[in-house]
Image (cartoon, one colour):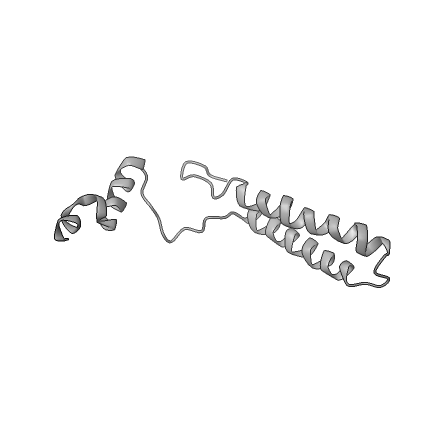
Length: 98
């Protein structure tokens, strides 16, 4: 049983240091992973989702707002804008001055 603890494969600290060395980059825990654009897109997505749920709650239940407009807003918010906000380029690299 103690044999497994002696191997570097089962040591999470050892594996983390190997990954840091292989990637060639320093990990900076204090940096924020998203830029201003990412947060703006998250805000737009939140607004679309909020308006979508508001439109979904309106009467009549078989009207345009609840059957067509609300689902379009919700799909745009959840499936388009939030993934865009996550995938759009994050922070600028150290070489960029913008």
